[in-house]
Image 1: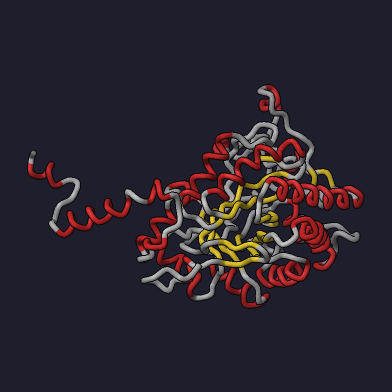
Image 2 (image 1 turned 180 degrees about the horizontal axis):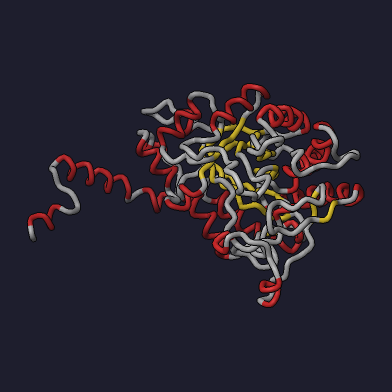
Length: 395
């Protein structure tokens, strides 16, 4: 594929990652939808993720998908801990690919952030009242027996043997993801979940081979990366990081840069840059200030230090904004979440906005009526007509 005529914007050029070519630099970030029972994907997931592929995104990544049942954030999370999960996930991957996008999936273990309610129920820890409704809390695990925040369950500290077994669980999950047809595999190493919690000194206070200094805190995430890399072959391997913890004594961007270098050496193709989540304690505001593109500076720093491609996410909402991030080399891939929920055709609209509609990828059954519609809108605007004009005339 060549750059679209009429534009030199890198946003609409392919990105090769290993043996995978993403047709453009616009991706859909994994978003938990809490629509699963016992980890199984449903018609909802097929429709939810398929619409983004039909809307022109180059990469569509399925939500955090648990490698173990106890690693679910909530009881309604997707799962990939059993072979039985593969057929339903295959339907999701097949539809995304059929519409010209690359199917991806995020593999996750929530660690000490597991066993909570859905976010519209405040993400509160499951308790006896949930048990009475058929969703009891379950034992949660972490590198150290430290709760994620006030009121949360204290996790059980994992043994060394259990940690080793978890590495194999990630490998098996990756094997299932490949069997289901996913071409991009992302490891969720951010937002306080298990991989992140091993890396951060705030959540990993061990003094054995899995903690005690930065190299030992990196050990578990790096072993997971190597095990997954061995399973996915030339498919693209992404790793989501929290660039900073945002708490005193927590990870700073320099720490994450050091880890990102090791992660790339272990087999990661693209570092996906986010932030925060190591704790739910809101006694003081620890979050990175929310503003448009608020992770881009972190992504640029990690990209410059590692020499490898990065993705970024966080209030990327405008086509020109997204195009400039890629044109300026601040990130190689932009990921959108809530903006895609609001407008699943965002990528196709971005092509029109930036003058690249002549090469728009997507289902011709959707695209062919839109060009004359846009031409008509332009003609009416030139004539001074608008949707409210007849009401102003009193017609």
